[in-house]
Amino acid sequence: MVKSGDRSDKIRTYNFPQNRLTDHRIGLTMYNLSEIMEGDLDEIIDKLKTADRAERLSSDE
Image 1 (cartoon, rainbow, N blue to C red):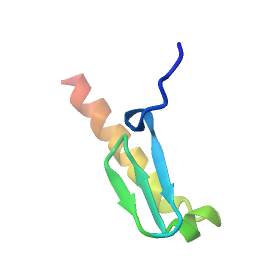
Image 2: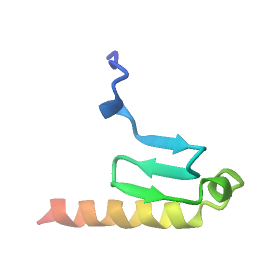
Image 3: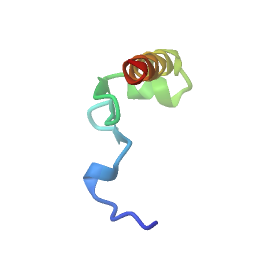
């Protein structure tokens, strides 16, 4: 399957001038891109796990 490459297909946006990371799947915006790029992934991983857990719980109902 070939994707169109539209903005709506994006999973994540990295905006270096504003030091911003946006994960479009869960609606998360963080303003610590420089730390994330240096490997400090704990916060974003925790938020992705929380969103995944919430989605799984809502689909079980």
